[in-house]
Length: 136
Image (tube, rainbow, N blue to C red):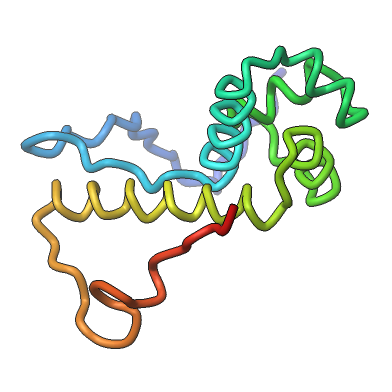
């Protein structure tokens, strides 16, 4: 004998379908901070002609972890970023300023590709807060 709930209404299952693809090209995603910082660390290391092992040893962090940070796979702590920056002869502020510059460059390219105009007001345009200059 089976037990069957007679007072329960029958439930209709509706399969989920993927949403139709929007017309036109897919919108570009916002760049992730970890990708930007990792890219700065990698490009600085390569510009110096140094190996991943050399910089990881100098920073006292593991080579696989530094590799994942450079590829944007790991969100590094400020201590790890400071150690990697110091191993490259940079300050943490310099690494973050370079990442900010890349973010501004990519965001500008993204807004141009979407046809968006830049907002007017404080910080907009030449001489605003968007420019970072590093002294040597």
